Image (tube, rainbow, N blue to C red):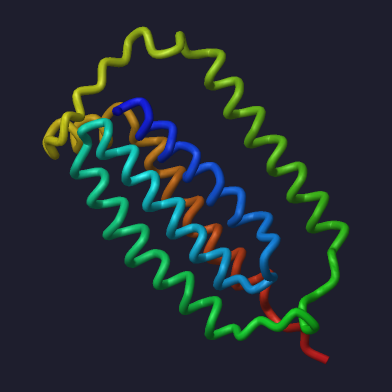
Length: 166
């Protein structure tokens, strides 16, 4: 039963994550934001299966609650229309590809330089004290990178949807 639930939550996470980016139903950004809520919810289900109940609760309360409300406010206040969207910028596309390639290189080199979890023994069985100690000692840099990525995502949504002045 546990492995079946894992595959269900993993499939839901991947499918809704794909729908955030490539939504075939509509070009409305609110629909993509709702698929992101589904992705966050299924990730919370995976955390529950790992007996990390605090992480699951934080995932739902902070990300599905507060951050998604902020994203929806930004999307709705900007009032995006399909016909008013800007054309593709060659420099922006090139810079994005270079940025993604460099992040991929850093990610892959980090994975290959570590010894695939030989020294890591996480003890996150739902307790908050070991989680806090592990998060702010061993995983401080990834924690800060995720916070910067959320900030960049919010600024990116604002910049990409900003109307051109005529």
